[in-house]
Length: 304
Image (tube, rainbow, N blue to C red):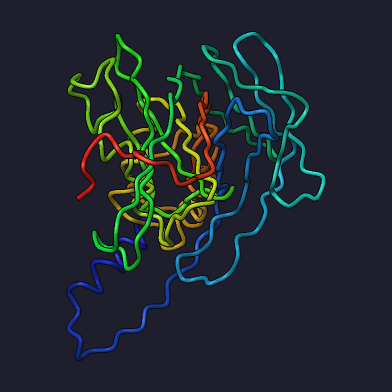
């Protein structure tokens, strides 16, 4: 299926626009798609199992129904995820399950196959506060808007990888343009940000790209999710290939040849029975604020 997609892409580049070529691809078997980003927040943890779509299908993904789905941590605690509606949405809501410093193994059993993945829950810095400042129309925005800056200091002593998420009035920014990942609060593994404050635009990137304006009275929040170096590279690949017309929420709808997966498929599986997707565990820090007119409030840098 992946080779087919690449072949069609190359074909479309080299064919002249005067010729109309109809391609009738042989539709391959759908694959298991895993979307499992778990965290230590006191809320239900959800794993999404779907069937991948064909590249030319304009239909919703079908649910993948597994025989069992569970997560085991390095202290041998087992968390069984249930899907009462058999809709591919598997959840655990009995207690907080992710703890800093533990390793987690995801196990999915379906028919005669067992799929596995592991993830380690790294530390995360606390967010000290939020700054905000009104920015007049310009800078790519039709209307004036408040720019929001998080104030946080990287953990010293090692490379730390973060997924920084922006929330406005309870809604996450899930557009690909809003994807904000960082090493030590900077852009790359230079070590220059070790133990230092997060730099702009890492500390403000998502807020600047929110499509509608941010105004007084809005509740805004930043979250920092600890991630692994592998998850950081995964998000880089997603961003570089810009595969999400529908944003991060459509992440694993179709298998893509150059996007990695950390889901290990069984050795006896045929190629079409291999799984795609990603499993990650994160420790999360969060600060929220309802914006009000505060004299003298400004960012730590000049947004103009």
